[in-house]
Image (tube, rainbow, N blue to C red; front, side, top):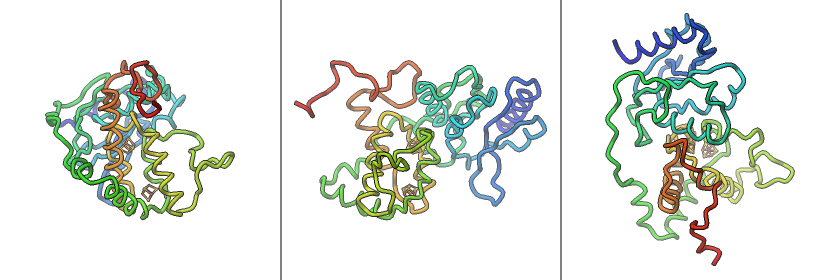
Length: 271
Ligand code: SF4
Ligand code: SF4
């Protein structure tokens, strides 16, 4: 039996028995192309669920909006499960209300280098081979440039931003009821696509992702302007890895580096 068929059977059974009220998974897009999220509430809809190489979305992004809606099953690849770990650590979902169905990442072009779910209640299918950790070539090329050259590249790329916030909407880390870009009292950043406002938005966004981004690539895929947000995300993740030895979303036990203080934290920037 294929992993997809086994997944459908299992989700049908979970819904039939009432163990969960909803399954968040993937379904074929009505217009072709990449799979879209599926919200399956009845056993007869389990046939809709698919698992193929176009399943890219990080489904954890929907969980904060599903709190208190009953027990939820979520189909979790490596990146989705890592984001779930972070959401649980940030108290955005109650673990007892979650049934995590781990699956191997079927995506043809996984952005994250963790393919299998890291946290699950059950795993369906054969685990995929995890790629050996390798230096990120794109990031290495970026880091080889001078600070002035790096700034020029980022500035040119980010200047194309139209402030549509698609990158924010697809990110599991962005669940605040009022985002800092929408707050008006006080207004932290202007809302226009003016370059200085736009750069400020991206700087603040990057800071908010530090230690939390799982490098799923959803934001970059959603960007209608083709902005390579992963250069920023990977750079920030590398800094957190180097300074705190922390890889985001790998364990429920690791403290979140930016909300935890230890006297050993590097403090040379204020010396
Ligand atoms: S910032 Fe982008 S790559 Fe990082 S978790 Fe959010 S959507 Fe994924
Ligand atoms: S999705 Fe792209 S264009 Fe839209 S706000 Fe994000 S970076 Fe800017």
